[in-house]
Length: 141
Image 1 (cartoon, rainbow, N blue to C red):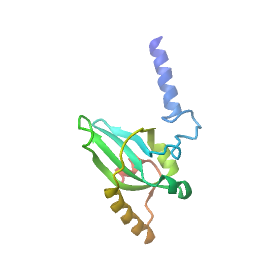
Image 2 (cartoon, helix red, strand yellow; image 1 turned 60 degrees about the vertical axis):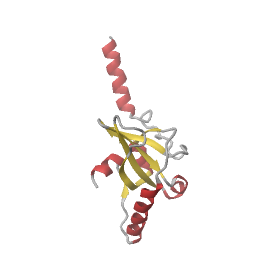
Image 3 (cartoon, one colour; image 1 turned 90 degrees about the horizontal axis):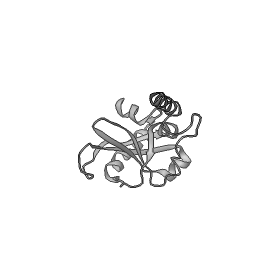
Image 4 (cartoon, rainbow, N blue to C red; image 1 turned 135 degrees about the vertical axis):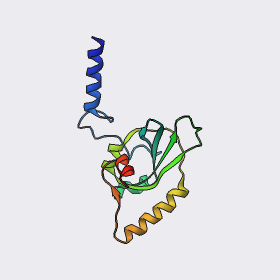
């Protein structure tokens, strides 16, 4: 009986996704003021993203994020910059995040340089905005 209940719970969680009930509006990206979210990691690495333009994104719908990680067993200060900048749509961001984090820091130096490069490319007519998920866009760059 326990195994049947476990299977039912697993199926329900798969049908609901990581953000709540099917048909749910998804995570409240704009309501989490810190703007730091856990995303899918790997077996050896925890990953999260930092939204750098939360207020501006409310109007534009384009979020500018940085993706960082930490390999398992490493100290808190030992982070890996997986992507210094990524432009992403709200819907893609909602599909990507797992849960909001309550603390963390923003690392603007590497982000600022990469964001400036993105803006120059965008001014030249080349818009690179992720529309799938963070993980997809990381892997398909």
